[in-house]
Length: 270
Image (tube, rainbow, N blue to C red; front, side):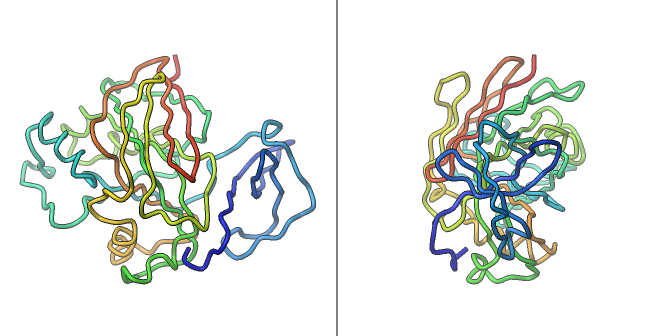
């Protein structure tokens, strides 16, 4: 990402039964061919964004996420749930990032309805910034981490907190289908170290923070994850949510905006 000199927005879209990537500016999408991570080129075709279906802006082989990565969220969880424990009841090691996995099938695009899985009764929103990996990263250092970031996006790390507390693994709580809204675009060339992040539910502001308040920086997270798992182009890292989260229910609309990146909007299906 450090090599980017111009801020650009990349989207993935569907039109006339086919899927493509494009650059998005002023409401117009310029279709691209080739890999956006290796220098895609314009096809010559353009589309108005309202005339196509925007998709999840990348196709990850894996989706990694981190919990408790804002002090304000740590305070909320400690107050609401009495502390931090690992599966089995042992104290959680807070000296390193709390990493877990979601799934590519967790992701849904901007505008798509969130459909709760059967039995989900306490699903919370979590407004976050997502990193999108641009090249293969294995055992990357923190100082070189930005070289592996293609861009950033907006995401919602939905979680059922009952399942989170009661299951041995966070398979259902974090990885269920529809539990990862993301988009509408990937933004490149942006300094992601201090961006305002806000979340609204039905128009009421619920979160207001900045990526500067992350406990473990995006670069630290990428480096840490890459010590154990090889990251590939298109893979995603959800970087954590600030402050208090609350349950959402049928008909609620969740909007998450990060300055310079855009606004993600999804409603819970009735």
